[in-house]
Length: 125
Image 1 (cartoon, rainbow, N blue to C red):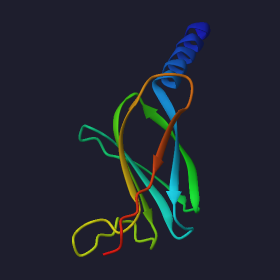
Image 2 (image 1 turned 30 degrees about the vertical axis):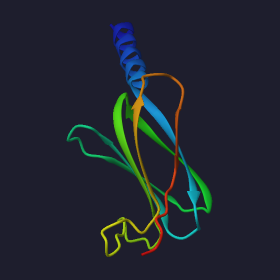
Image 3 (image 1 turned 90 degrees about the horizontal axis):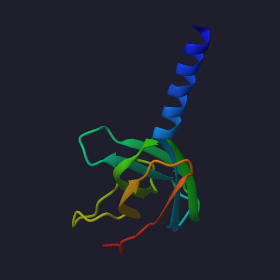
Image 4 (image 1 turned 90 degrees about the vertical axis):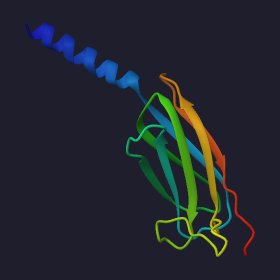
């Protein structure tokens, strides 16, 4: 009986390990060290998005998220230079902070998925 319980526990933990994925985000094009880089990972369903935040670093920031299951995702990244936790918009309702968007597909595998994104900074109004 103890062996059966151990086998079941090992099988479940192995299955759970295979169904979740680590994703490494490499965000480039960061123009300064002000504020934070915010990442939102959202499925194309109505599920709640997953968020990550890293201190801004001029040039490039690398951050990771664990436990992302396989599927299709929409990514939104922005440079929150003034630390107000929102993408600021100008008078024409266009973003005035750096941002990027991308759709990706996470496949079930044992390695880390690397997602590279470059921030776009609009011209000031």
